[in-house]
Amino acid sequence: MDTTFKIVCPTDFSECSLNAIEYAAKLGEMYNADLFLFHVPDKDDYQKLASNEFHSGDQYSFIQKKLDSLVNIVSQESIPKGLKSCQSEFIEGKTVNTILEYADVKDADLIIMGTEGVNDFKQNYIGTRASRLVEKSERDVMVIPRKVFFKSPKKLVYATDYLEEDKLAIQKVVDLARNWDSEIDIVHVSTKMKNIDKSLHITMVQELKPFLKYEKVNFVLKSYRDEPGLGLENYLIISKGDILITLSKKKTWFEQIFSNNLSRKMSYFINKPLYVIKKV
Image 1 (cartoon, one colour):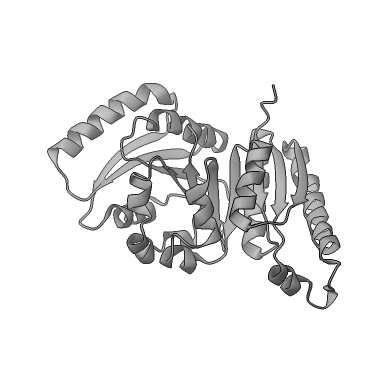
Image 2: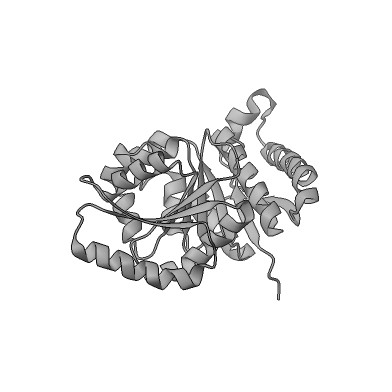
């Protein structure tokens, strides 16, 4: 049975997708993974990319040339550092559905995708390609904002709503943290500090600790007057978190944080990645 970690990284050859490839390559090195660079052709996109080079009929050779170049660069840089393989493919279709279908065919463990417009992501959470992919995917997704370049994270922030599945999801967070020797803040944001919140927090800490087996973990219960998303954003800024991680399970906590109203107010995604755990 093939147990190789597999990463699918969609690219449209834009700046933000190149940053996503950088993250995908670095995580691929860490997991000794197979990396698949994937493109869904869009006529408007490659007309802009190719400008004068573009002629009707040769768009496929142009796409293949771009993908081959990316594979060569990634392979030269990352295979000596642990990446198992890098290959590419392109398939026509509707962007989000085609990416998800391709990830299913490859049995991907993780999809890493750039998001071009931070403002689009904030103002219209259910609407952009990246956000639709996060919403529809049954596989873990990492979203990399346009101006974010890879750096080893010193702190991972895991946002929890005290779900039973947190016990399994946190294992993935610990695996990430171990590789980077990162600190983990497990954070629950409450809008009203009630005794039930405090007792639930204490119970959850007691239940989670045996699952962790990692020393650099902090359990945090924060109370803010605003909505949970804004409180979480505030915490991320103050704590200097490098990656926000959350479990998307039945749209509970995830939907609270990233509803349309909240995401309009959030500026966090201007400079930090989001890792959404879908499979536990």
